[in-house]
Length: 59
Image (cartoon, rainbow, N blue to C red):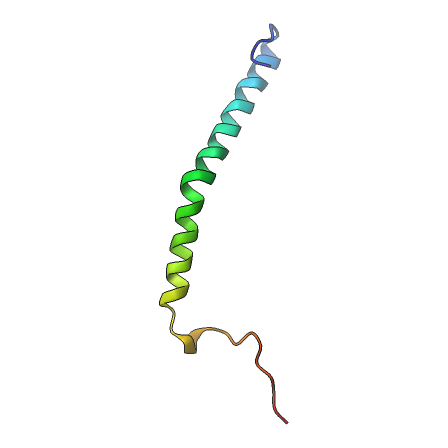
């Protein structure tokens, strides 16, 4: 669409490339850093503060 003569199609092509580029940048740089921070925070939480996901109530 960047090769189009029509200004509307040209601007859509520009916005498409901008959107894909920003998405690639976020997924390669920001998202891995977020996952690392999240796993570090989960590892530093004491075991007593973690919710019991498979707790069985005894009768």
